[in-house]
Amino acid sequence: MRLVPTSQQFICKQCRSLVTIETFEHTRDGVPFCRCPNCNVKNALVETGATASQPGLVPVTRLLE
Ligand SMILES: [Zn+2]
Image 1: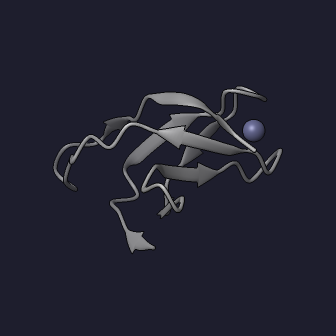
Image 2: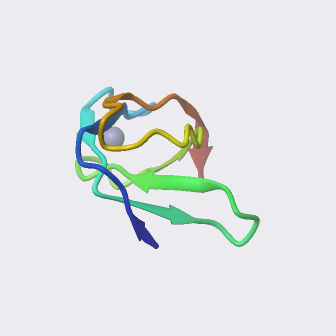
């Protein structure tokens, strides 16, 4: 787990909430994901490599089990 800038967000693929990313987690395969605080589903995210000066929406690729 590592800290990322809080200015990055994603839209949950299941409940469509806009979620501010606080931490990325990684699966055993190294896929970055973020858990939705509303429906508790894991959204696999594209690792953009953006920094704090590059806020924006991080694309969600799929949902994880
Ligand atoms: Zn959700």
